[in-house]
Length: 133
Length: 381
Image (cartoon, each protein chain N blue to C red):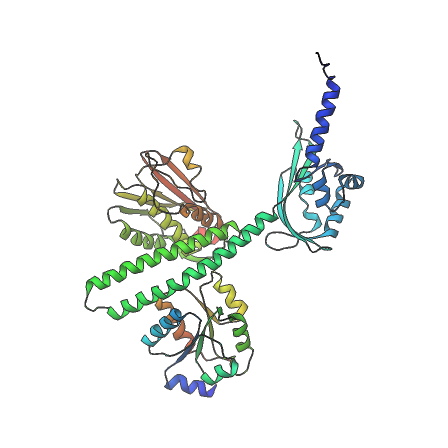
């Protein structure tokens, strides 16, 4: 918590994007770098330890990618003390995005296709998010 | 050689037997109930559905209560929303009590075999000339096949929209990134091209959303959100956007008030857009569209009037149907899928309002929709 607070004051925010579509990863990287975020993209999920090591300020998570169910991944991350503080935003082109967000126990959702302004708003809000508990 | 004519009584008996055989073998379950709930008649399907091995077996039971308990012993029965039916929700009992037609769509889960099926149960009261109940005709129609097809269609639409939206997301974001980077910069032609691309992407998004909504409406899963907003502000916003589509048509707003509405702003905006775009599309020879917003104590009413080709009486009944489009006098149809009014009507109905039309061929059309005002809203108007 203390480490995060210091980071909030001093550094660039880091956003991790997990999606198996190369086009989506590309535009997420381009759009977020325009706003000076540090962006890490991945087509696969490497597990809680890898996420802890990467230490992103927030995660955009696709709902189905490379054989994974994004809801299970989100629940795993939210259920682990090492990663539960990281905001998870469900990124999906499925029409029932809100329902998927609840099932994933995620913090918010961003439905594809989206306006860049919306992406930037959500990123600004959640990357600066300091959990209360 | 002369053949002897059959006596009338013999002929009637023969006809009755044919009729009995026909009803017995219908693929629909038919059961007749007397006003006191006693079973007067049932066919084979009716008996099987109600958990009996033959119509004779059911007729031995002879009353509604024992049949109902048998039915609920055999099946777990749910409605389309997935809520459990209870024995006191019997359509037959309600038809007897209220002398009104009742219909339920139900999902049956056979407790023993695990078999799943869907059926529509209809209870139709038959009254004599004095309005007294003679009997209730109860029918069960198996719609399992329809339901399976509908579920397949829904799942296909969900996957298809996902697959279309993924590349659309990339193209849309790339256009926006380019627009951002060219902001205030050089090439006006490039900027114009990007704006046009952006509009086309929005059209594509709208198409995908409309098709998905049709699928949701058919599956009974279409829902709206409710938030309070100023209705006229929405109208002005939509008119501004629609004016760009056709600068030739002057879109005039006649409204005196700032009405607060408790409803789904985005979806009501779609209704406005659909009606205005239709007005533009079907009135290429004229140059104005008049939008009037009035209200009573109970509702706000909107009229979208064009001075175009108009709609004949016979077509006025069909225009709210899915995929129906009005052609012009030479039979030529207009672009579009013919789902705008179908979706608009559903949106208005979900708000507790209604959508209707007044039109005359060659003179133009006015589409109206009304939305009820909540009690708290009424005072503010």
